[in-house]
Image (cartoon, helix red, strand yellow):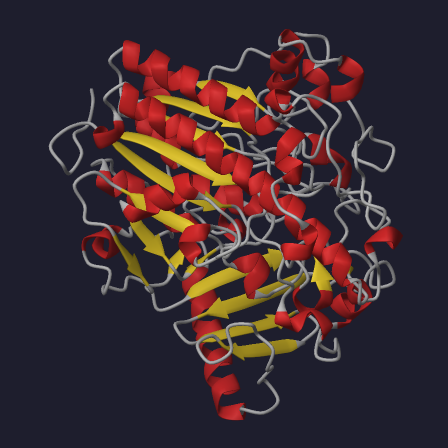
Length: 533
């Protein structure tokens, strides 16, 4: 039975998500260099959240938080070394139970597929005495399952009844994306390549191997795969006269920075504005970031390892120009998908969301990439919700990634489930002056290696309020910034403003107590089990 939304009829959902896109790397957030006309047009008809933050600035934890409406410490995916529990309830499962067609096209990263090499083995035995999941449940994003031209039969992937994966970044083409590209004339040897300096490339940067033009035609790139297959799904669902929830997940602009074809030439490095803090002293940084600051990208041990620019401003410009090219390509793809909605007469009946799973330092404080960097650059994301018949606007009200699921459920008249800590943003959509949060708590955890193995703290917690950005890690290192007076985070205050520091520490303590999960062990969602087994 279909549930009726708050507007009197069933409403579709189109959820655009990118990977590793800063909040300020889009036109509607004030960037005057990059051109994103299609995203800007959606923003003009929706609510832009100028103060939107992640629950965790790492891919798998935050994507799982968006799916579940729960913080990582509650849903259990706290790092890129473990998969979201197969039985976890998600907002997508609730939409499917309400009669929606549901599809995930592109990057999922709810399971450790290509990232399974980052899995940290436990020191003794695991927490579970025996398995309680079906065999192979966490192998669905394993790229090896797709290399022979066949794909696993997936009837339910955390609530998605239709799944087409793009499993890697840069010029590496894996998953359903590989089969699609081969069908379009792509050469296997150009597509199935390592993410390393050995990958075939055109116009590779002399400063950093991760900036290059892929050797294949732009039509084969992941961005086009996501757009084309999302369009096909929307057409199919519409022909069946069924409402749909489409999760269009672009693997870009995550590094390597590899815009294909002419997109590589869209922006020139010499035109890129480098951040004001690029040359700031690293003295106030925690030890692990001082170490990263001193490590030039050419000295990276792993392609995902945080690094520093070491005064190499040209490298920052090259990386930024390539990143902007990827985002421009995404914008064009978004335009093609929304044009399909208009052609099919679905635009006025579709909620459109745009966000990213986390950001990137892109040279701020002399740092590149993401990971254990508790700054605005990695933790703030672009966020907008365009809902039919709701007035457009902008809001400075705090919002979090895990609020998006509850918001969509609220808009569509779908009941939430136990344990959701995300908050519906519908009151803000109705009145941008309204606030539904007084803080956002951001978690970040790293596997607890012996201290001799790494300087990275095992736990970091950040509290974001309307005016303060405060971080404390398990090594007791603190950083505090005035969000309003110092948006570039160049004036660290923890040692200069003891009163404000104490207030922030007390607020963080309260937030941690409030976030403690009370839903573990509660009864299962019987309605979903009865309907889908």
